[in-house]
Length: 445
Ligand SMILES: NCCC[C@H](NC(=O)CCC(=O)O)C(=O)O
View 1 (cartoon, rainbow, N blue to C red):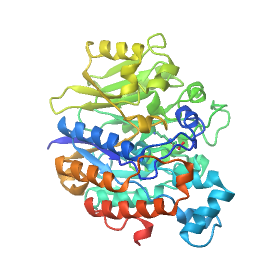
View 2 (tube, helix red, strand yellow):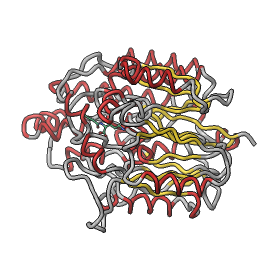
View 3 (cartoon, rainbow, N blue to C red):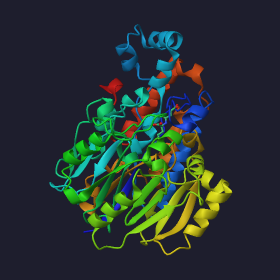
View 4 (cartoon, rainbow, N blue to C red):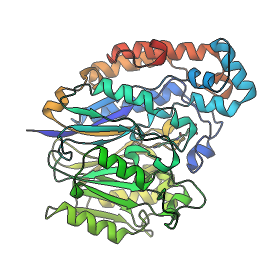
């Protein structure tokens, strides 16, 4: 049976804006209050999806969330009509309004952790939405994420959906941004790497001191238990606390894996040697490539600036691997030279393709943040909601849809505009029909 890895990219929502909400994420803070362009943002994402589809990849879409989140604003005591709720929040608590308007669900690497059926005891694909407990604006995502995932991966025969972990720092879970899977091919049992920033219950362990560690070991272990992974299918690795303090807020800003390749920075992990040796043991005798980028090749700061590791490493139908990189990597002399040299080495990585995803990058999200990977068998793929898979027609439909509903500029003042709420709901209502999602949004229920 054939197996493949599908990428499910988050569609950027109509309220995409720069609000400086993510302490520890350098780009988010430094672009706080810049003007955003939601229409350009959604189109940049769609162009990347279409390009991967054209390369012969299976490319899916995950719908955005309903924002402004009027329900949360009401829960926090803002009353009246929707327009009054927005106006009161804008006046009394602008920071809360911004958070309730974030389009952050676009970064679907944080939507969930996914374990393919080859790794799980009951041989189903398991999904656990990430609670994103560390950031208020992101903690509003998991319930709707769960509904969307259930609607895209609906079959009980093939898919198992879990509730997100308890919403507390002790179980802080950022999903697949801190999870990667190594395997010799997508259909055989793999080794899932769970990377955490701190131990929740053992304070004697090292932890960052300046910026938050969003993800805990205890969360990783809980997800591995829920997903029924065997001892040999999971490795827990602590992220280097120093790099978190330098702005590496997720492991996918400093490491990425695909198939039998792990591409990572020398400073990514707290104890690299121990991690690599455990991976090697659990991976067995199969060919495995560790591509370590040294400090003197690319500094941690340059990795953060260019998102060299927030690249997608994909296996093309030919079997060759390609890196999907943000154009920032091409614009940086050192990183560009590194990538040009990398593809000449004796590793499976043979090509690099560059994409402009600047609207997302300015909030700290590169190509890899924008996608959730789901390895599937042919039968499992057939059980996926087919209306959520990109082809030429859907690409065109969604571009037209974006032209119709999306603004080309949003700043803080626009977030309180009641017509933005109405436009967004109309857009999402139309989208649920295009993607045949059913009533996943609260305003539709
Ligand atoms: N995987 C990439 C996630 C980026 C995301 N940025 C944000 O939420 C920034 C939103 C803002 O500042 O407007 C985060 O930090 O979780």
